[in-house]
Length: 153
Image (tube, rainbow, N blue to C red; front, side, top):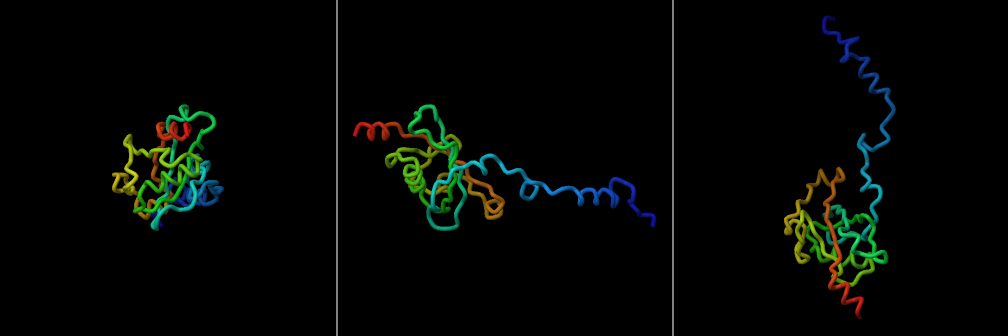
């Protein structure tokens, strides 16, 4: 046949080489990020399904002191409509801090604990992106006046 691609980079030889290559050590050929491998677990899912995977990253860690130093990252599941105050409560319980001892932030803004993710203008990934493992990244920091009051008590 005049249309044979045999012996070209597009011929059967190229496909056979790909097919015979060893499988990737990573799922679906993608690397698993350090964040996915090393995150501590926040606890049980918060709120009602559907849940969104959330990665919680501490900021200003130097100001936390050695006794309160949090994990480098925490991962949790948060209901799309759950108020973020529930996340703050779970985070404080997990870290052994008084109620209201941390604040949540996203994109340089403090988040309102009475509102859900979307109501705080946090983009929530759709179902396909959630299945692909996409997480919402939130930052958290100590609320120093709450911590100081608890330390004085």
